[in-house]
Length: 148
Image (cartoon, rainbow, N blue to C red; front, side):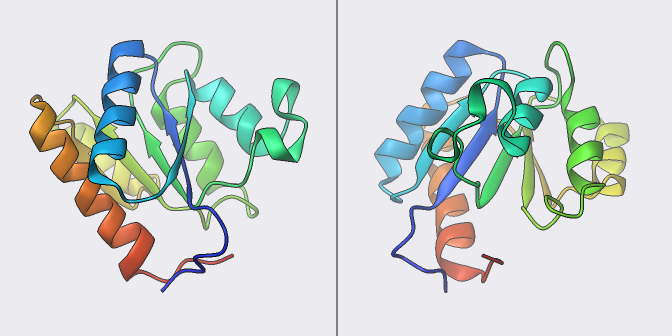
């Protein structure tokens, strides 16, 4: 089980503002107690993880315990960001769950080849999204032991 004294930070890379709002609402609804942070593209994700730019201060960018990653984003897409995360010895232990609208077999295969921990197609209905966030919370926050 995970240390409950530290906030469990989930970092979501998602370019769509409506999807960010829905994910935040779904996380609130399922009451799993995580601190959800958002970035809008792969470049901003890597800035956050590397504490660069507007994320220089550690309190603005606490290390996430889980990354939710959209694939199709501007500036740097999820595939490129995933490749960089998993090739970085300091970041590769952070679990990455791809949460995207794509269900293409080539995307699924490629994402696992790049080192993703899971590939999930975004639900289209809000109640399904709440259920998904509840399941992710139960698994990643309560069931597995993650490195500190």
